[in-house]
Image 1 (cartoon, rainbow, N blue to C red):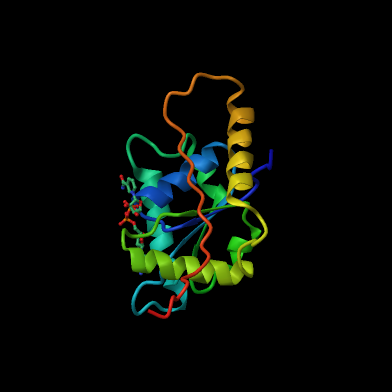
Image 2 (cartoon, rainbow, N blue to C red):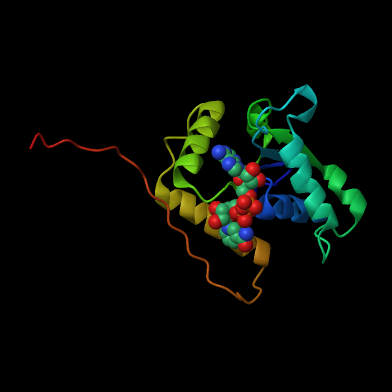
Length: 161
Ligand SMILES: NC(=O)c1ccc[n+]([C@@H]2O[C@H](COP(=O)([O-])OP(=O)(O)OC[C@H]3O[C@@H](n4cnc5c(N)ncnc54)[C@H](O)[C@@H]3O)[C@@H](O)[C@H]2O)c1
């Protein structure tokens, strides 16, 4: 099983900041990235990610098991720090519920990663994920469904009609 040593969490709102907190609770460092606020000066370019992190620190019940664990979360922004996704073993998207915003962000992430691996077959990806989960749970009873869908996009074939 591949070890997750670093994670990039894209979006530092309700979900993203708390996902980063739970990763920290598990001892996993993360980058927590968000947009730059409008009219930001040099000192406030990561203000939104910092605010998300601060919210996770103050929330009740606590998101961090220990306050000191928040030091495992490195706040940043999508303009200065998106290249950090290349250092991550896992990239989690948690930006605002707007498909166009998400799609554009995925394109930028893909550009940073130099394109997605083209050789892996969907069945192989699903098998690898499923095997990893089975290895991790070690026979524990499943309390929820595990549904995996992996699609290969082959582009649009124009029929000329
Ligand atoms: N909150 C929940 O309980 C919950 C549960 C399940 C799924 N989700 C999903 O998780 C995702 C995030 O939800 P949330 O509740 O954390 O939302 P949120 O509003 O708290 O956070 C969204 C984040 O997106 C950022 N954002 C705004 N405009 C952006 C842009 N143009 N580009 C990139 N980032 C931008 C915001 O700065 C904010 O930090 C959504 O897709 C939502 O549907 C949320």
